[in-house]
Length: 281
View 1 (cartoon, rainbow, N blue to C red):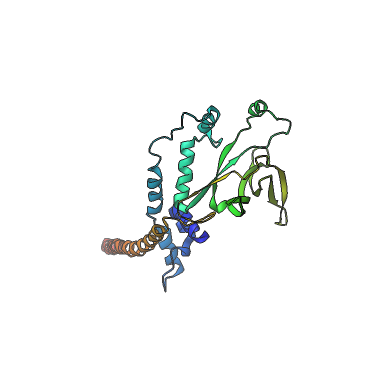
View 2 (view 1 turned 90 degrees about the horizontal axis):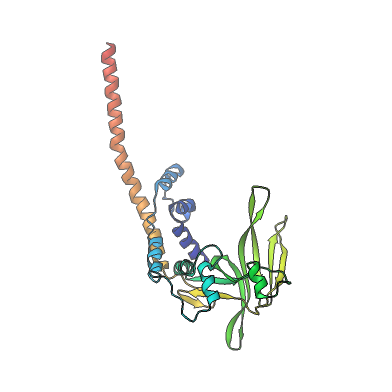
């Protein structure tokens, strides 16, 4: 399903991404020269029916703001105003997760918590340094692997490995985006980064006191545990077909429109030459 999600991701990214994909989604015609194909690719434009459908359908359940129950703890109500510590409230965050699940069939929410000093043991001390749970939206293509076991009759996640990007200062004005793999287990966490030889080595590790991996998974067309099929996959293939056919139709039409213009230019140039000849005589 990774190839299918890659196709959907390219469609969702729009015309630029489809042009960058080149022959993967716009095959070269038999006997078509490289220059002719590159020109046809450069002037092809995608009608993004896939993204438009996802945006329209995902907006339906969120046409009104999410309402929290009266029995919701006041602390959680306060956290929901900035649920991901990036300025998004619960309504905006949930809409983003659902739109991703609708496009790819599956999406995840990780409840994260910043590392704190072991000395900060009371809730008051942790609140003073801003330590609080927050949501992280994990897209399925970030996940590099997982393990699960049936515990007390319930399929339970026992290990989660996912790729993330962190900004690391490299100077006074510059930062670098560093890729790392985070590994979560019920009682510990660790991160791995690549060394100069490209090997993944342990970078950091710590203890998880929650006793489980706080991951919530949203399915739109579940095929199994942590597996799902994109529900709009057939629409994506139709959008690919439209991208290909519109390119094949528009390119000859553009040439046909350009030919009369070229003939008109040649005719005017011939008339100019005849006029100059008469003038010289």
